[in-house]
Each structure stands twice: as C-alpha cells, then as structure tokens.
Image 1 (tube, rainbow, N blue to C red):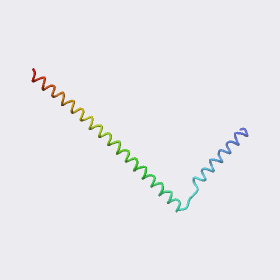
Image 2: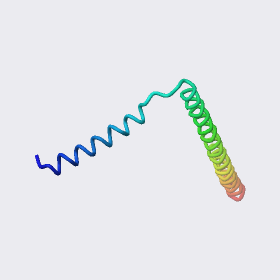
Image 3: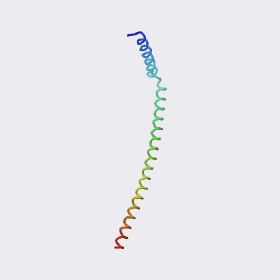
Image 4: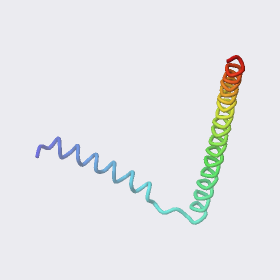
Length: 90
C-alpha cells in the first residue's frame, strides 16, 4: 500500500470518527428533552401541513367529480330528450 493511500485513509477515517463522536456525544437530560420537544413540534407542524394539503386536494377532486357528473347528467338528459323527440316524430 502506498503512503499516499494510507495517509488519505487515515485522514478520512479520522474525519468520520470525529463526526461520529460529535453526533453521538451524550447530552444532558434537559438538552435531550428540549431536542425531543422540538422534534415533536416540528413533526406535528409537518403533519398538520400534510393534512391541510390532502384536504385541499380532496376538495379539488370532489369538485371536479361533481362537475363531470353534472356534465354527464346533462348529456344523458339531452340524449333522452332527443330519443323522445325522434319517437314522437316517427
């Protein structure tokens, strides 16, 4: 193994170790509770936003379906009226 590869591996390994040490360092109970509370608040906020987005999309779909249903109803009524008129003329 060349000295350059060994040195590069040593530096990368040291950096990874340092990052892992900082991320996994124990925190005080107060810090941990605050972190958990903040995470819970953020999760609730995102859940609320998602629910509102889903409700909005559902409302749009329902409105679109109602409009299409009304269009189909009107077309069927026109076809029925045309058939009635054709039978009366015959």
